[in-house]
Figure 1 (tube, helix red, strand yellow):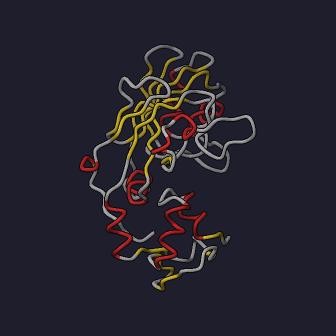
Figure 2 (figure 1 turned 90 degrees about the vertical axis):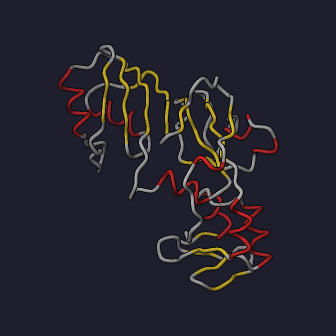
Length: 233
């Protein structure tokens, strides 16, 4: 399915639409190796390769990463009427940032935001997956056999989850470490074993921890803390 190049770059968390338009104006965006300057140029993300000129890469080398504590009831992005999203809670200077992955509206905890696509790819790269740690309160007590099934992998609807690590602290409290991030995955996993999530908090993504951030608060992650390189997308 084709889409406008600005929309693709923004949704993928590579650069904002505004920056994409500026890069297009300068001829700094290449599709299949050819510079494009026309706003609204359409690409097929499955077959086209998007890359950047040296000038664009130099500008993208300095980037911003925020660790943000998403409160429950706030959507990650794409808000509907009457909703608030993460950027509504941030100072104006950070509202151009894109979330790396997402948490559903009812979930809370650590979300990373950036203005750099290589940073987003670093965390979302399936070839070298980063672990995600969640604290989960189940609606009902979980048996050892249910926990074992979750650890081994369960069918969440046309997909069987990868094995994961689970530390059960009480009959209803779990700490779950995943190496993948399917849509509403933990909620669907618990549903698959006859339970449901009462509360879900993400505590860690890769090496970055939620720590003592209060709901709605953020901290800036130093640029030199991640081995990130700019590449083609």
